[in-house]
Image (cartoon, rainbow, N blue to C red):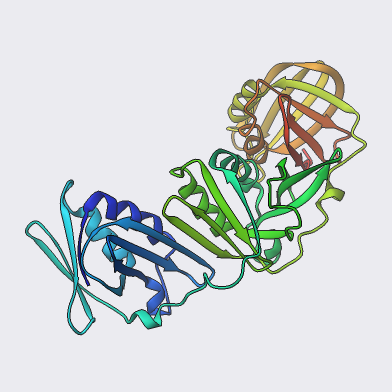
Length: 371
């Protein structure tokens, strides 16, 4: 194997694939990136056995071949090479060492056999559809903050993606919850998504996908089965195993009898909660919201720090005192892009629904705190 490649192009691709690789690995081959040179293209792939990223980049290939090299070390080397340089990669005759040359710099890295590199990308993926990159970004951003991190309830450690129906219209719906808050986002069901199984995409796959989608072109092709999902766009393919578990019946968590409705400017509310929560207790981050007629008072107190309060005008009249975790509330209100948001409440012990006035595609449920 022998090739030369633009340093910036190689660095960009290495940055994408190396983030999958865990810093500490008991299996040496999982620390490596698979490099394949063939007819003007260098392919790079990494995996942690649950997630795989494969990316292709243009290169001047003098000799075809393949090897695996330490992913983080190779990334660090290329990152530190001078801007604008050409990088030459070559493999020795035994296939045990790869040379990296750029200008007067030269490095040699130990390699492991290509045959040892595991492949998770094989297998049939019978369901497929496409989404605009902007819609996939919105789907992830509106729900990912509500994913759980608890290992015991592993089936909540991801986003539940499934086919559903809303007001007689077929929709693609994404749901995430950690038991304290729930986020639901939906869009018209894309062509080809009808009949897809309900799947739970793991949080690591969501995190890697979100980083990659920022640089994605217009359309992302999604194919899936009951055990795997694949996202393909530009010259990148991300394949992930799915969480093997049953997502709970989230519809039971969404209250239907809440009768107190108020509307408020979302940006003013976010800023006020952020300011007042500076005083709140470090563990619970509790803030109290008091609705009195057309006025909302946000307050917090701490035995150590003191107290804070701020008043805002609201549309609609209600009388209620209810407490929330400030971080959870801010996670929701920061997702609201329109001018106003709507709170639909029942009593201090019942979950509250929060929605964007100008966008009904997202719905959030927040459990109260005792204050």
